[in-house]
Length: 126
Figure (cartoon, rainbow, N blue to C red):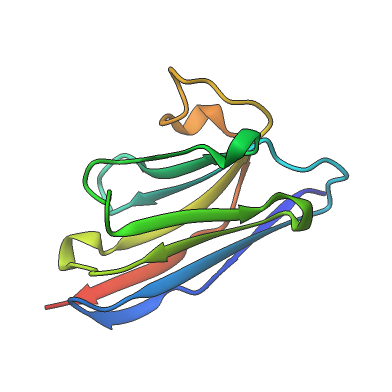
């Protein structure tokens, strides 16, 4: 059974940093893409960042660009999200996702990804 296990969420003050981790287990194949999404109650899941196995190409949502860095160790089936200069509007449940392909058109959509973590809460206070 394929599972994504996340860790690293928590509570910080505005301006602080957090690093989220996500590890895939139960699969013999390494993901082709890793992504992070976030969601607040009553709203749709929002794309944050993606990294592609080919040349470690990355893309970021405009709202986090410059403050967030996605990295991955594809050989270890692990992805990370380093978040700096956090603001209260970054408060959400953060989900990691793993995909088996990359579409330039759809990478920002949840249905692009086959596997999802359970979510980890990030709370930023002012």
